Image 1 (cartoon, rainbow, N blue to C red):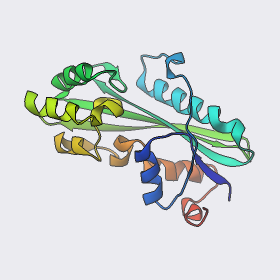
Image 2: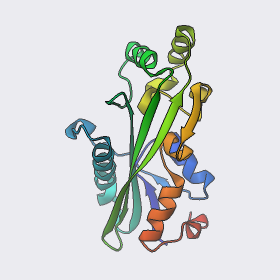
Image 3: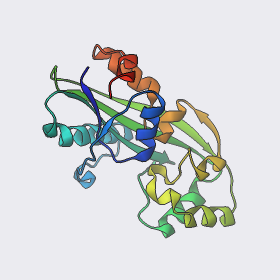
Length: 197
């Protein structure tokens, strides 16, 4: 089996893979995301995921490399990580009581076979109508500043999400069911990576 490489420093993505039995080699991509501009969230996250995977690919001869990228769209606006606490507060004041759409691009490069698959997972997120006090306390915790969409479903932010439509792990940063299908398309069975360390 080829080595499984995660082209991301995201602890949440690494933990999702490990919980699913896949222990990845973590190789942070230093790809400059500002190089990619698009008003289409699907195109944006798919291109970013592919670029992240391709950036780390030269470090390996034969490996499966997974690149991911997530954005949240609310009322037609695409959001990545907030750049400041003030931006995070303002964004939450717009998001509360609304429904956003979380897009996660997944790019899987199979270096041994010279193939790649790029897909997008989409999940609708229903946000609770939370108070200004709760918003300020949440932003002060620092958690939303490190997250696309300004919240972590698997952290304190889970308190403020009322409902999901679609894959829950996609909102954390990596759709495990989608990854399972992508591995299958490349001719691999995800369970075979349970023993590959």
